[in-house]
Length: 124
Image 1 (cartoon, rainbow, N blue to C red):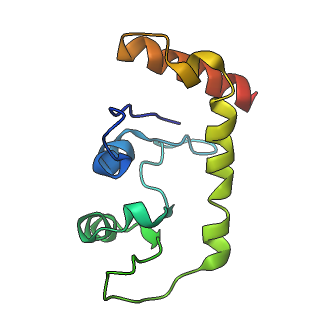
Image 2 (cartoon, rainbow, N blue to C red):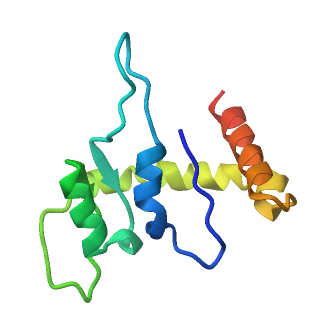
């Protein structure tokens, strides 16, 4: 699909919109690639009002648990949230490649190429 690199101290929720803009899934048969996912599943780190409003404006359904300090409560589908572990396991498998885990490459574009190559090897 797509990757967005962030510095080590930056949380990935800050580039969630950029990640959504980059991703496109090829449709079966003819037609333009699909640019909007049906649902976004994330952990509590993604639970911000700004991100939730952005996803609602785009028509993307949300499965993100609320933080303890948030006063809102709404429906939360635990069975869909449990499927998030597939992504976590994929990231774990990516980090089994030494070049990905230790980041030998100094330039971001070279590192992104190594991550893409590792993901392709895992998907095959």
